Length: 341
Image (cartoon, rainbow, N blue to C red):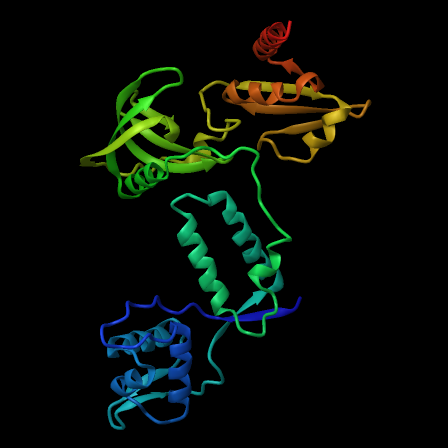
């Protein structure tokens, strides 16, 4: 595979100092320092700062990055009063990036569409743009080339209170206790004191996983039902045994209970290909049927979400087990039919 190159990531640019012109990007500065040092001029930090039109502090930090992160043998010579290389340096260091890796970055930029309007949109987009700017001019691919080629779309965009999600995420990161006013479906808001552990986007929807002081257990909260979230001023120790993957291991979405259900659903041939084309759950097992249909087996801890999923397939899906789910589907189907009488 053809190899593409991009320079190593430079240190973060510091703020522009009063009285100084706009400085060069960090990568360009360090390449300029490399050229000056390679020329044997033995310039000190003050002279380099004048040449680059930045502060002496910026030069010192760039030199430190070149020495410690890029492994360049750059040292200060007190006798000659300037920097020099103590060993042979062929060229400024680069990292190797394959066409496949670059393509992955392009796809990631398009995937940002699902984060439009969230607190994570701007920092994610800024990070990708920085990566784009560090690619050398010889790379012919460009993010904009894929504007009409790749996209990510969702059928329903959830209505989110973005500042609230940001508040929840910050509280989880800083282990800050929160007081929530939380409304259950069709209920009135009630106060909950929680320890926020994790904020996750599951199938396009945001959720807060937190220890509920009232329930004395980890509970899942939908931000859309949180009418108010305020810090109590207290902190809590982050639990070492909390694992979201483990918590949701037996769920079909975000609902997780301590139940154990062996779900078996038979799908007709007209929708069988749709079932085959996705990994619906880590536990799934498929069995091909003679008439072209397919049977799926799942091991779940809750039946709430899988029931909605099955109903979405209409008459093309038939529940074989468990009996409780089969009966629930029948009751719902009769009620649905009655609505159209």
